Image (cartoon, rainbow over all chains, first blue to last red):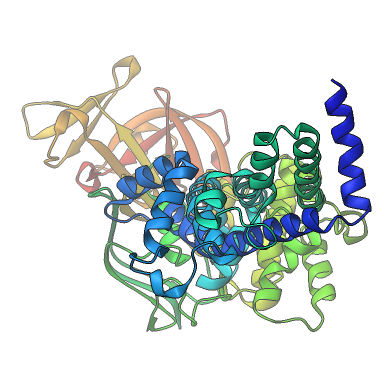
Length: 228
Length: 340
């Protein structure tokens, strides 16, 4: 148990002494997660609304595919993205391999089904009378969409937080697509894997606690928003 | 001018037609009552008139112009209070102000919200800041109505506005709806099981049954079983040996439902008075009510466990002879029966 205690002490030391290596990993993690969450929320919420609100041919099949993608293995996503952005891949010229945007791209693929499926579920659980009420209060199509989303904001927020949790804690994509390059594409999770491999448990635990702190800094405002 | 003109309307779900209306109009500033049993198409009619959905077939004209959901000519002008009114997860004030805000009518918004709350009998000082979850069922319904009244709509559609609310809330809702008509000339279309209230306030009473219009005014529905009497008439037996005879050829005589308009029947005090062209049924006069819109007195008569709605003879006849509790005769023409 000593190393757990040491890890806690070291976590505070790394954070409060401004350890550059730790902060580099924190920056890479936050950047990749921010890009991927921005993309997955922008694409996933409207897609979830469409999937949950409209009836169209093939809707059930699309829903089945999206639900299946909830269980996407991160190494599989990493493999697919690696194949796409490596030299021989169709996006090889873009120079995304071993970069933060490359990691973000993979994480977007990971988070998109989560945001889409959970948003669709939130929209489906919406009271059918909401639509009738809004239309008869004079809402146009855009106002109907925005107000409906606001009414299910807790469900959408849960979708975002769940996706954020997956993105923040994944290792497979960051390792395969990012390459775990020090000062460049090393994220907290890949750093933990590396430190644990080296037998540096305390550093690994310290980095894990840093990851928890980042997660807390996002969920706290979300929790406050939920109260409103 | 007509607020609504409906022509050759049919609407259904999953390929099954639930409402058909050949022709119907509602004049501006009038009150139309829609009555009918559950599943008769009342709510479907209101959702079409509220432009929540488009009819499967036919056209609806609003103030002489074809209109459909989200049309500019109906948005914010036609307001509907659905049967299960939904409140946004916001304060009472925000709920009532919502329609005005999306119309960008921000000037004087506070005054209009407070006026609307006053109209439904809710004190703005007490209720405006309350969250949606801190309201009783009756208060929620009144807030939902206030949100519609704040828009000062040209048409207000009320679907069972007093269902599942206490007597005080029901009274407030009724008064507020009529106040809207009086103050802004709002056209009211109301569905309700409170036939007495509807008959009292409505300029015309529309009776729906199994998705079809039975006609205007009070109706009496007579359910089977029907049997033939060998002379081309269908008969419905009542207790104490009474039989109602009706002519016609319904497609499924065994399960057919007959409808007789109140105007087609007449009330008599003795059997000798019954007109020779009328068949008669004996019953007990349960209650009398005066309809302001038709200026007629309607009577509810209990015949073998079924209530017949009959109008008393018009002015000039001594109606004071009829008292609730007395034995009366209902006279009807067997050829004036409509079948469904």
